[in-house]
Image 1: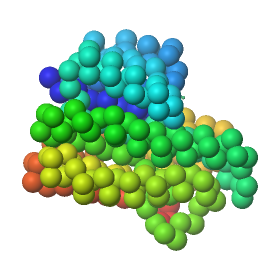
Image 2 (image 1 turned 135 degrees about the horizontal axis):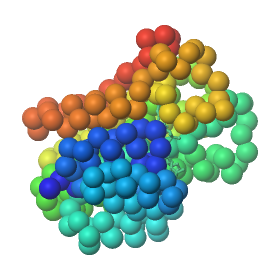
Image 3 (image 1 turned 30 degrees about the horizontal axis):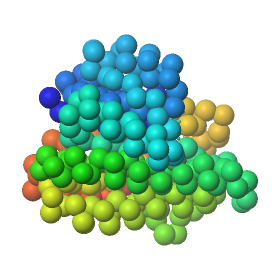
Image 4 (image 1 turned 180 degrees about the vertical axis):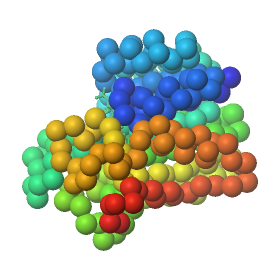
Length: 232
Ligand SMILES: NC(=O)c1ccc[n+]([C@@H]2O[C@H](COP(=O)([O-])OP(=O)(O)OC[C@H]3O[C@@H](n4cnc5c(N)ncnc54)[C@H](OP(=O)(O)O)[C@@H]3O)[C@@H](O)[C@H]2O)c1
């Protein structure tokens, strides 16, 4: 049975991905900070979702969680680096927010990738899908959340670089750059259009399923997909 690790599994995209792949029979290791939400998710997961409460911004916690996953499930076939937070649309944000966003979105992705690579190498391959954002897709980004954009540009650059290095080991790295997805990330923030035009979390899960089904001779490196009304 294939083992998938999903970060940020307690909400939005990560939750949809966890449920989708649990239904397909994957063993899904679900990471997030909210213990109660992870436990509720596990109850919906046909016995295939295993909660691992973890703050991905904390390297020690990431190390411990991945060691536990390997002890309990023996391998990692797929890693979905999805945990992320956004910044308020302001020109300056406080330093604590800067740290939290960079540590979660960028360093969290790097920590989890490095924690998964050795076992994937030992097994002769694996897949890593990093959820960046349209905020990381364009040099001339027009949004007003610079720290978030910087973190996501970092994720794109990291994915490209590490992807080149591990391809020879049969490990395929894909980065996704979506525009607006209708998730709790937007609750309390203003999306400039009706939320019905947004991408749905289940559609991101469908795209991931499609990418994972592709033969190993094809690499999807970077996929940008946006609601049509967003002017990217
Ligand atoms: N929604 C959009 O429009 C959109 C567009 C482009 C890209 N994205 C990206 O898509 C990803 C998923 O976002 P979403 O829209 O699904 O948002 P969401 O509903 O707010 O979910 C974010 C998830 O990340 C987890 N998380 C946050 N900080 C964490 C930490 N330090 N350690 C572990 N988990 C953490 C949260 O769980 P806990 O709070 O329980 O830890 C939650 O499960 C993010 O990387 C986001 O940047 C979203």
